[in-house]
Image (cartoon, rainbow, N blue to C red; front, side):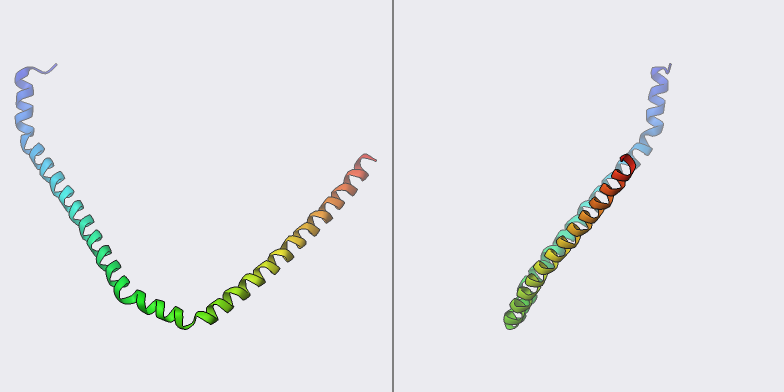
Length: 111
């Protein structure tokens, strides 16, 4: 067991290390906070710039090609529906064939 005097000596010897550690932690914390603040500022500035300068150009381009975009979207939606139905029919046929084969195997095994 340590005596009171030994404990005081250990604390006195460790004071500089404790101070250095506390300073490092404060510096790291400040660095982290500043880094996050800079990232937030950059994000805000980039968003404001894009909203003010780029977004109107994108909207203008989309508006200019509105008819072609709508026609393509309608065509894709129609084709997707047809392809979905075809895939479902093919899957159903495959399941029926597998079921029929399974039935024949079971009949042969237990007949």
